[in-house]
Every structure is written in C-alpha cells, then in structure tokens.
Length: 441
Image (tube, rainbow, N blue to C red):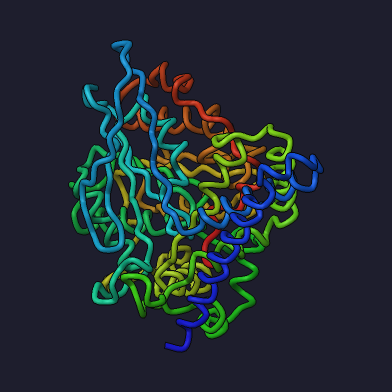
C-alpha cells in the first residue's frame, strides 16, 4: 500500500491549486477594489479564474453534449447517448438520433484508453453523425472500478472489442483512433479466425502504432530507454481511500497529464497566459476556443496499471503485433487470417506521436487480404490530433473514409459525405492538441 500516499498527495495538490485559484479570483474581484482601479486586481482575478477552472476540470468527466443533428427532412433531431453493452472497464454506447431513419452507414469508433476520456473524440462523432449511425467505446476511469472486478490488460481490451463487434454485427464499419489500432487489428483477426460471420465490413486504422519501430518518435525512444521495472516504480500508484477502486494499481491520470503537457510545455504555458490576459481584458467567454479545448484536454482518467505496462511491454518493446506474434487468452492471433475485411490506414505527415510508417505497417501484415481491399492515405500537413478531429479530418480525411466504407459496401460514393454538414462543423482546437493521444510514456 506504499503508493497510496503518492496518489493522495497528487490529488491534494490538485485540490489545493483549485482552491488557491478560487481564493485569488475572489480577492481580485472584491467590490472594494473598484475604488482603486489598479490592473493588478484584474490580473489576480483572471489568474485565479483560469487556475481554478484548469485544476477543477482535472477529475471531471466531460459531458458528450452533442447538438441536435439536421436531417434530410429539414428537422433537427435530438441526440441521446444510450448504453448498448455495459462492462466493468468500459461500455459500448450509441448516439441515438431521435426520429431519424436508420442510416446505411454504421460506424464503431474505438476510442483510446490513453489518459483522456472517449469524449476526446466528440468532434469526430459530431462530424460523422449527419451521415452515419455511430457507436463508440466509452472506457471507465480505473479509480472508480473496484479491485474485485479483476485485471484489465491488452488481452482483455482486445476481447472487449471482439464482444462489441459481435454485438453490432457484420455490417459495422470500425474506425480505431491511435492507441487501439493494433489491438483492433488483432480483434478483427481473432474474429476472422473464430467467428467469420461477425467480422466488420471495413476497418480504418488512424495514426496507430502498429509497428512502433517503423518510424522513431520521442514516444518510441522513451519506451526503448526505460526498463519495465523503472516504469512500474515511477509511474504506478495505488488508488486512495476516497474512490471505489481503493487499492487498485493504476497509472494516474494526473501523472499522465503532466507527461502530456511536458511535451509541449512552452505552447501550453503561452496558451494559459494568453487566456489570463483575455479574461482580464474581458474578451474571454465560458465556451471560447481556449476553454472548449482545455476543458477536454485537462480532463484525465486513471489507466489500469496492467493495461499500461502490457501496452509498453508487448506493443512497444516486444512488437508482438508488428511481428504477428500476439497472444490472446492463450491463442496466437494470426493477422493473415483477415481475408474479407477491407482495411485502410490513415497517417499524418507531421504526427510526432505515431509517425508516418507506423500505421501503414498493418497492410504488410495482411497477407491473406487482396490488394484491392487495402488502402492507405497520408495527410501531409496534419499532426496527431488533426487526423481525427481537426480541419484535416473534416475536410480531407473524413470524406475519404466514408467513400472507402461505401466502396466496400457496394455503394457509390455519397455526395453528401464529401462535405460535412454545416451543423456538424466545430472550430479547430489549438495546435497544442498534438500530444493528446499519447500512450504509455
């Protein structure tokens, strides 16, 4: 239990920082300060407001808050989030667009379990809803999962995906974003071998580390330098007594967040300072571009320790997917068994997390798949975040993915899919989002 103190100390520091921010905001906003209109009071209140909001968001799961979708019937259809399959470590949820007929395209988004909640893909969901029925994997915060529920590692993650695909049926089109790409490929191969009728129609892998050694990044270099013992000692802690998962070994979300921020510390610091100045000048708003992004970016979740460690050891160090040597529940998965599922890879030319070459390596593993069912695309100017949630995704990648789905379903490319519905468009997040999908380091 020696790591409980470290876990509770981090949460105490977060609480204290939020309190300091609230205190500064209150002191700087006293009505009496208006008698001495010194800019220091405004700056103190602004610093306090930004600090309180930033640290207060760090243990709060964001709401999906999906706006109504405009239909072909010229009506706005309310979107309700429904749980389809409920499991201990994650649910399969559906975005039910009320009053709309079932869509021909059915899409399952596989969200990363890499520090942020599935809501990180909110803009991806919003962009797809006008043209598809959408489901997503909604992973739970490990600190809220009792120890009695047992472990959750990369094999369990893969088996969860198998169950979700079986639930949705063979006409589902799977899109895996970043970290889950190799495990989604393995889950598809497992279905191809054990239950071919449950295979998805198409599989799109976006910016995932299928072969981390194909193109080195800071992430893969770090994974090579650090031993598993060092990772376990420095990154793993036990959940404190405040939470249902008391005693569970986790990679804490706050520790992950500090790692995320350190990769682009200068940009994040500049963004925070600019927001403080905007608040002081009265130019900020509750839902401005900065708050919209950082409310999501700063919301982090604990990752099960066994999932984190097995990801590093088996996917990054052991290269089990890249070598086609991945074992699930005692069974050796053969990616070459995929013969009917069309597979497309998408990479960003400026992706510094999963560099170009890591994801497209999946196609070489698909020895049983004909070339006409393989496709790849590189978005030259896109970073990691842009390939699934930014302007590059909306304008270029999304239409290509939908056309790929249609082509392999025997449908002609849908004209509507080539341009996102105006109601679905959201503003681009700050460029600091590039590290948001970071896994394990």
